[in-house]
Image (cartoon, rainbow, N blue to C red; front, side, top):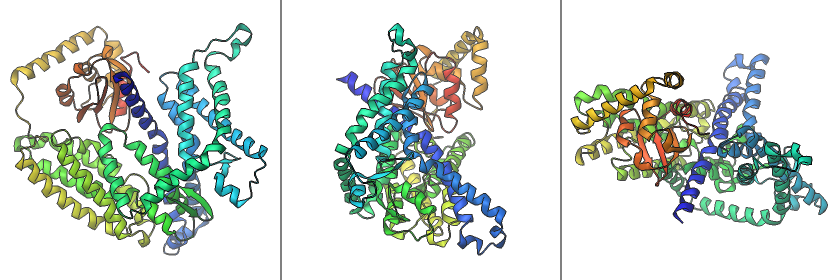
Length: 545
């Protein structure tokens, strides 16, 4: 039972991580679409005459069209990204098979509907089945859920049949070549079942979405709070994806097309000249303007409080840590480098932080702020707020952020001093013997490394600044302790032989923000925005995918 639970946990962790590749592309495409659509709109060109020139118009229209790439092909991107992320070897074949499986599933749906004599132009049939154009095929729009199902099935098939042997006469179709073949066959069969179950399943999802919609502004409140509470265990991506890309986050007509999911509706509205409907504005309450109170004001206020509460002699040492965390939060919308500074020393303070984030969503919804997108950073505020005009109510964000800055600053300053929280710069002086022991381990690791300097040199070159990949690997327990290694935006995600061999204190001395031991085998080491370089460096020294 314990083994099954650990395997399920590892799978969910990996699944959440796979969402990051298409979501990162989506964030970039959203910025392109936002800039292109705003600077080519009549509202802007009427006030800035030179933007009416044909050259400028073509450039901004091109930017908007480029931004539609992720929005138009989002499901197939997820269908490819999930097997790509879950596969440990031959990732390219896994991604290719994801596309094959997704196409096969939709062609099978088309076959079923055609054989049954369904009229693709009949409005009742369109509404009952959810018929839409998918990759040029009249199929059922299963959206993110269908794509996730394809990705999971293909990843399982890839693991099972990647080394499949065939009889000599069919040997050409064996091995890796068999993966896309079996993916096409299995997903084609599953595609025949979709018209039978999807109308009912989609009705359940719609009911959930309507139920959340009936909670009014409290829906965004619980969403924002839930995202923060799930963040330490890395499952917030799944919650966020449900609201962004399915009926749970809202659905409705945008310029005559039925669109599901808060983010999908927002992007569709950017490309639509008509005024947003109430369905669009309600859905957008789950997007980035709700985060801005905490991201642009609250967490920077908490960072300043931690700085002022640190010992004076320690302030110069922690300044760079706090400043880099604030920059990552305000500019990149990445909050873990700051959140993990107080999560482990005061979980109850993190819970209050989650409530305050939820209140930020609620406040933005009550005041009618309409900015949208994904990250809640200053770029979102400029591109999707300021550039889109006063109808977004972007001018309210600095006011809200200032209030949250003050609340976080005084709350954190009071809590840190009242309860003597060991935030950065307030830690007790380390035991001298333990410090010397750590130094000896570093020296021993360096001595042992001399014999394999050729192998370790590339790793050290890959990691800039304070991160020493060799020492971090040693603190994790060495190459022999790592079963699998991957990363998300800010953290290393690993399954290890024994979490007891992971030296949390030493990892923090080496620059890690925090360490999360989920169970006996699953560990996350929070590094920050440079985690990809750290992971790549460590990967050169261990025999894992």
